[in-house]
Length: 88
Image (cartoon, rainbow, N blue to C red; front, side, top):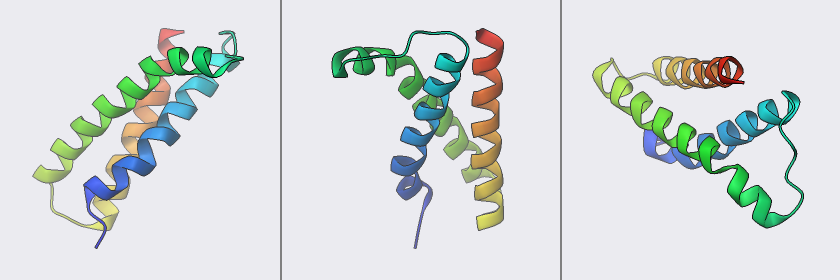
């Protein structure tokens, strides 16, 4: 019953939070106010949404199974983290 679209609202905030945490751990200033947080997470949310769109395109071309879906989601999350580390 859970399709790829149903997982998007769950993965995007988690991936964006991971990217923000990596940025803060790398020395970026931690946002203090809600407005600063909103401005700071725009790149992370955009990256997570873009990666999610690419992942959905890839999953549609592969045989459907929960294992494949999970492997693609995990791989994309790992790729986001690796890209964030290399850009900092």
